Length: 311
Image 1: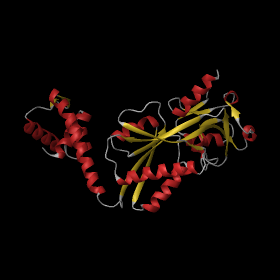
Image 2: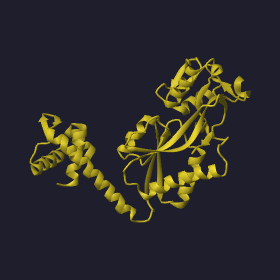
Image 3: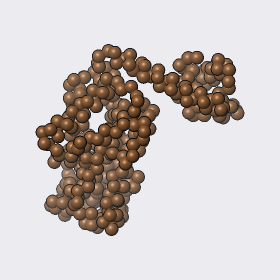
Image 4: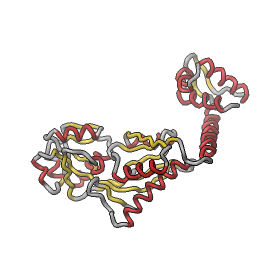
């Protein structure tokens, strides 16, 4: 039994299609089919029911799939341990960033310091919807995920608190509201609104606060990309609600703090019981050290980007 055969088997079991599995495995379909046949011969059990182009796992196949995935994961972690025996000189750390967070001041500082210490490591950042991040960790697409703190954390994940970001109203710098020091939700909902889509945590949090105050937002436009929202706001007509941290270094808009303050805590997610490469551990160490330093120096919030550091 070979590692490549297990990979072919897992890909076929995942796609339930030998053609798709071959494409995923970067081999010809005939090669994949032959290798799976050899695996079945060695195990002396059929792993698939074959019906033309369609396949289904047998009962034995379902049982073996659990072991195959575990073996492949053990092999992956073993290779990572061997690679880590060398100094942290090359490689990539894959970081997921929830839509709406943006590159915070804290994150920008850590990226800079990390590069100075480890110039050969590439920090690859992917921004996507927060609900997608846990599964990307499980599939080892990501090493680390930075996201709005979920209400519940799955047992296979570890959540470390990072900072809170305030929700604020944003308007164009020449908007009639731009001279205000703050704004309440009752005033916000009377404006022409372009808001994050209802599926986004930012919007759910805002709707929840509005409901507590017996008001309801009726946006004229909903968008699931904050950069597009901010572009529309800069045009002058629209008002929106976004996290302070998402407006870092954005010109042409004015942030109006909400009254009362609405704080969104953020966290770093990693996979529990997973071998953590030195390059990843070093990134997490720097991230934690930077936040703790700000706390120790009493610099508990950032008026520029809206970060509020929390224990």
